[in-house]
Image 1: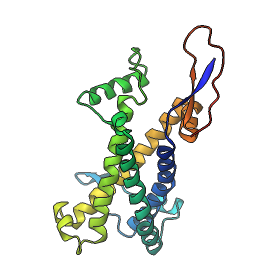
Image 2 (image 1 turned 60 degrees about the horizontal axis):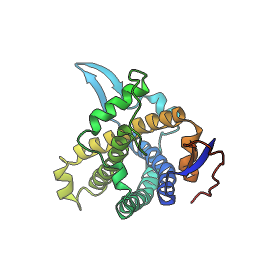
Image 3 (image 1 turned 90 degrees about the horizontal axis):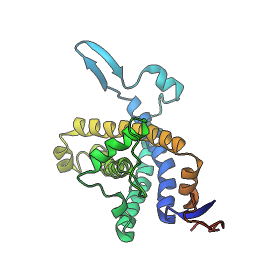
Amino acid sequence: MTRLEHKHDRAVRYFHWINAPVLAVMIWSGLLIYWAYDPYQIQVGGVVLLKFFPVWFYKTLDLESGLATGMAYHFAFMWVFAINGLLYVSYTFWSGHWRELRPSRRTPIEAFHVVLHDLKLRRTPLPPGKFNAAQRLAYTGVVMMGAGSLVTGLAVYKPTQLAFLTTVLGGYQAARLEHFALTIGYGLFFVVHIAQVVRAGWNNFRSMATGYELVPVVGEGRTDVVAATAC
């Protein structure tokens, strides 16, 4: 038998589902801006190993000749992204939720064990807990990335008015590169995150949508199913 067990607070779910489409718009509009000047590539000697991004990429996603549109959306949704992020961080401290996400000195090695477990290279069960070490590392990291995006974005947006910030980040071109690198980081995080959600199954997705997940009933003689309503 199974029962419904609370997992995610309403506020955490709201912040999560607001951030998903907002971040998608930010990346899309950022690519429209980047199209106008796309110098970044991975090159060894005179050989280009990877170009960010090839012509077919822009054509397929219809990202050409949209600089003005990209800037309008990017600078408008920037405020939604910033406010939602600040509210989320404030809530985690106010509610004590940060304790569940806080990495420790052992978190990196424990996260490595989680990876080994997911790859079926380690059979020892993971320690019980709401979030495993890899999740704590990833979720804390993505919050820091969000802060980095805001700081580097402001340095690129207002390099004269915020000259001190731009200088601290290494100058305009360095700030732009750092902002771009963080965007690539979001893309990689998104791919891994979705893969983990699919791997974890419907129960995990439902917990982020309703706040509750189904868990096996522990104890003999317990045959009832506890009904609960999403908070």
